[in-house]
Image 1 (cartoon, protein in one colour):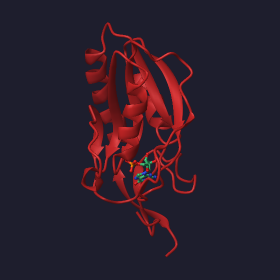
Image 2 (cartoon, rainbow, N blue to C red):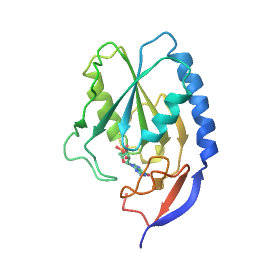
Image 3 (cartoon, helix red, strand yellow):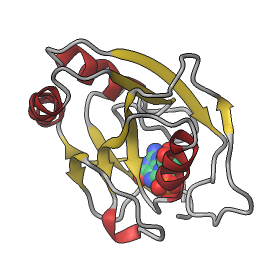
Image 4 (cartoon, rainbow, N blue to C red):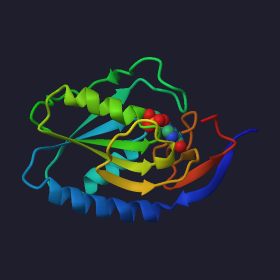
Length: 178
Ligand code: 5GP
């Protein structure tokens, strides 16, 4: 079956409203701290851009990219950064900004890699949580939306590099095997 864009799961205005709520909580939690947002490329780029502009507190940002586990495939080896952070991470208050936590492998691995850099604190902010697909437990301190088990695109999330530009999150019909 060829894939096609399916129904809207989360509208653009719903995403923007939730980001304002997340930013309000984060700005309280990180007031007077040394907040470093780490955006996980490429999927989190649009979420990061809206989230950091909604934060009324000082923060810095950096970007990482990970080797992929592939969607649904079990990891054969522990993925590494294909692009590591440029700034020093020791004693920083790191908030990882992710698009989606699915099986949890990527989130757990990110935490492991960042913990090794001795930050003062480490937390995860993920726009989407596909909780029922979890294989590895990994905390999400700031979660946008818990979603059902479907392959979704839009608002930074892609299928074959398409659909990232959509302002909303939609279900992809006839998607790859998960
Ligand atoms: P994990 O299974 O390790 O939690 O997630 C691995 C990666 O798979 C995510 O960072 C994301 O890039 C991708 N992924 C998981 N579920 C979806 C989905 O529904 N849509 C898209 N576009 N990517 C997904």
